[in-house]
Image (cartoon, rainbow, N blue to C red; front, side, top):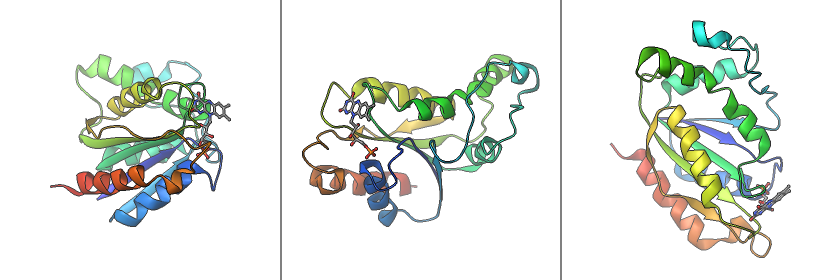
Length: 183
Ligand SMILES: Cc1cc2nc3c(=O)[nH]c(=O)nc-3n(C[C@H](O)[C@H](O)[C@H](O)COP(=O)(O)O)c2cc1C
């Protein structure tokens, strides 16, 4: 089983990291984690070269991620909520999926062959509604052909309780691991 994690947090030991560390304890197989802040992935510049070729011309780590998106079984989007949205850096990474948008237009099907399972982990201090960020994350997961999406897991009181101590969310992570392992 191969799992791709897109981590949208700048805090290496923050709430998102704590949830991912807990989830990793329950996951088997290969886990490839991408940091939207530290992996130097440029945003899409809408050059439209991929519209014809189906290939993004920006030479960075995203090239490896496209390959992983082809092969992986699961994709997890994990992010703090910023202004009721995923973090800007994570949206920058997601903008590179524009190549799949053009691919879908051209092929009248999805350019990624293998369907995946998906999940969204969010953390927030407690302001606003996480549904906006969840809806964006689900849309991004669909771009990568994640078809079966686990219900939102969100620790939304981190100003009071660190995500690492949010017992209800930690239990949901165990359920998520079972969902990702299912045949
Ligand atoms: C710029 C900024 C905007 C934020 N906006 C929200 C928000 O809209 N809603 C919310 O619940 N928390 C918001 N927060 C709080 C973070 O989501 C929260 O502290 C989170 O636990 C940090 O996660 P991390 O430690 O994984 O980075 C915001 C934090 C920052 C820095």
